[in-house]
Length: 408
Image (cartoon, rainbow, N blue to C red; front, top):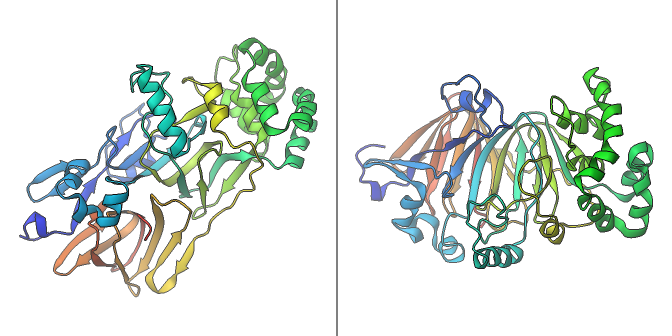
């Protein structure tokens, strides 16, 4: 970065933090960010952001500082006036996820619900770190993901005729058909979520007994709910069966190809099943769980925050600007915008940042330049760009970069 004083710099290296959750893979993330692979360790997420749970480090001429502290030094200059006024902090959290085992089925609350829930739990004296805490902050958590590999997920309730078909064709669940036809999505979901563990076991044990042998013999298609229901139970003590199995039969099972994206708004139930993705979300940790988890499930709060309606998946391919090498995945979220920049030596990307932007290279190498300041960006490395900075990205070969920004 030359001898420029830090206050004049617009470009900075930024280093994220790895999260070692048990559902993560063993090699993708450490290989990407050039960290040693430790045997018997799982690498689930790589976070780039100012979330207090795992803040990124900004590398300055005067040493490294947490992103939150860095932004605090001059919020208006760093975030841009509009974002500093509207949000007061970095409004997004940027992640790489490597999903090896299925994640819990979950729903995120709206801002209004998060504010009410957070206040209520504070008044009840529930510590932020308590396992039965639903609301960790006052924010919503819409999120977008783009697949980096073949990616599988659950996303919203099936259309009525598809859900009817699943119930009819699954002998152990066909008794629920009348409930669905008479009481709709809410009636159906409330019924199964309120079952006691004993009732869940009685209903699902025959299903498990039927599908597990087929799964182990490789006889189930990945697009079928039976495949994922069996996978979630394989190698587990099946004495008590997770009620999340019901959701697998009620929700859309999506398979995204590399480069395809999907947006998940407040209230849409979902679960990541398998694959690697880039994810960009509002800066929140509010999660209401519905199954496939050993963590706290608050059924009443979950039902209050879930959209009980059919979801027709809207797979996003992004808006392409070939001259600039950029594909922008537009959503209704005001907190963030995700884009992919793919360049060859004949294409230069030029942009002006609206707020703080974070760029991460997934493949290849590039140079980011602003006036006389430049910074190299190699695979697995990230760069932070201050608000209102006009910059160029060039490569001598080819590069694939993902960018987190705030929409104008």
